[in-house]
Every structure is written in C-alpha cells, then in structure tokens.
Image 1 (cartoon, rainbow, N blue to C red):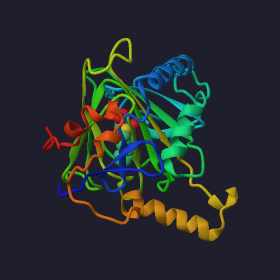
Image 2 (image 1 turned 90 degrees about the vertical axis):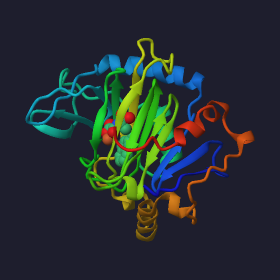
Image 3 (image 1 turned 30 degrees about the vertical axis):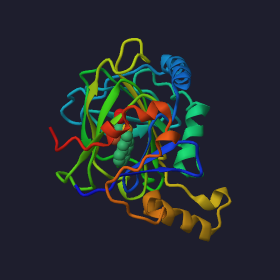
Image 4 (image 1 turned 60 degrees about the horizontal axis):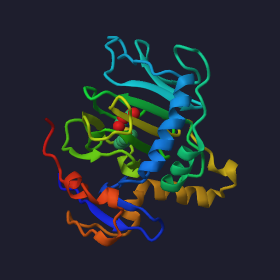
Length: 280
Ligand code: MD3
Ligand code: FE
C-alpha cells in the first residue's frame, strides 16, 4: 500500500508522534515505565469489580481468544445475541467501574474531542490470543476519535482501509504506546495478528492489555457551549484528520530527530515502522 509514514516532533506536545496513515497517529512510549506500573495497579483494583469474561461470537457462540471487560457508563459485549453496548457487566449485572482520570487525561490530550469517552474496552490477550480484522462500527457517534493504550507484551497490530480485503500494513504496539484513530481511518479494518511473548515484564503473567476509549452516543456539541459554527468546524477538522490538517503529504521517509526522541521509543522505532508485508 502506498501510504506515507512520517514522524514529526510536535511543537504542541512533548511526545514523539508517528503518523501511520491518514487519521492513525501513534505515540510510542506515551506512558513511561513508572506510569505504566501505576496504571496496571489501578486497573487491577478496577477489574476486581468487573471481572474479565470471555466474549462469544454472535450466532455461533464460538469464544473469542481475547478476554475482556469494560469501564465507563457503557460497555461493549458480544454474545450469541449479537454485539452491543450495555450499562451493566453481563456476569455480575453491576454497572461498569468508572474510567480512571489518568485515562480521561490521555483521551483529552491526544483525542482533541470536547466530551469524555463513554466506554473503555479492556482487552486481555494471552500470548496465543489474536483479534481478526474487523471494523468498530457499533458506535452511533463515528465523529469522535478512538484512543487506544497498550500495556504489557508487544502486539502486532494490522490496519487496512475501509474495504475488507484491501491492502494492509502492520506495526508493533509496545507497552506504554498510545494510538489515536480519527477521521478517515475511524472505520478502517484492523486487528491484532499476534502477541510477542516475553517482550515486557509489566504484567506478572505476561500477555497484553489493551484499553480503547470511545464515544458511543451521538453528541450535541451545542449543549456544551459550542456555537453552530464552532461545532461544524470541529466536525470538519475531525473528518480531515490531523494528518491532512498538518497541511502536507510526506512520502515514506523517516526523518527522526534522534536527539529529541524519547529513549524508550528510540530503540525499536525503525523496526516497528517497517511494513511487515502482507497478511500472514
Ligand atoms: C483502528 N482492539 O477492541 S486497539 C477493539 O489492540 C480492538 O486490542 C485492538 O480492535 C487491540 O476493537 C486494537 C486500536 C484500535 C482501536 C480501534 C480502531 C485501532 C482502530 C478503530 C478504527 C481503526
Ligand atoms: Fe477494534
């Protein structure tokens, strides 16, 4: 696929940001190791109240290889009846625990969206788990971004276009990385090919945790003080995505200001920007 990847040092933020394809922005090493340890500690206590469960495929009831739970006012579940968002945990029947402030802060910092997320899916991958290519389209609000946080072992993430069967490319998501999906990539097919064992010691039993925050309900920005013009401008900017907002199209060429790179991100940046070929 002739997609451009470029890296820039943002004047706006202290993070190295990598544009994978229009609307897909990767922040390698967004959370440092000390922060990751705190994040996992707080997640453990939240997940104690909303235990991981194994979703199953609609109709067939085939179990997913990934375990999951949710935080927030709405949670996504899948079972024989289908995919849906609901307010309660399917096993405990209790409301989902709240999304912690550190996650909300990340959402607002990288997401450029004025409302809090309603749902945070928590996916737990063993080193044998994977997630096939799919679109996230169960949200009525497709204008808000999706913000994803990876913790633990490295995941091989694959992303394509909005048509099934089109070209894809893959890159590694390491512990502490954040990915933002906006604009024209919001409906891209994506999945996790595999998890690479023993690449992180963050989780006691290994594996990978992924958190994805979403808006579900259509928002009305006028209710939070946006004028009609400002709301329309915001929606237009979201549609274009930050890649085009930057006002340039850059060919696949890595110009990395090494001296400014976060050391954690520097180690494997080149390797993980290398397209891993076609679907295995
Ligand atoms: C690209 N999770 O929960 S997160 C999912 O790593 C999901 O667990 C994967 O796909 C994981 O639905 C990938 C990154 C992600 C999330 C949403 C996207 C990438 C996306 C929506 C559109 C395009
Ligand atoms: Fe998804």
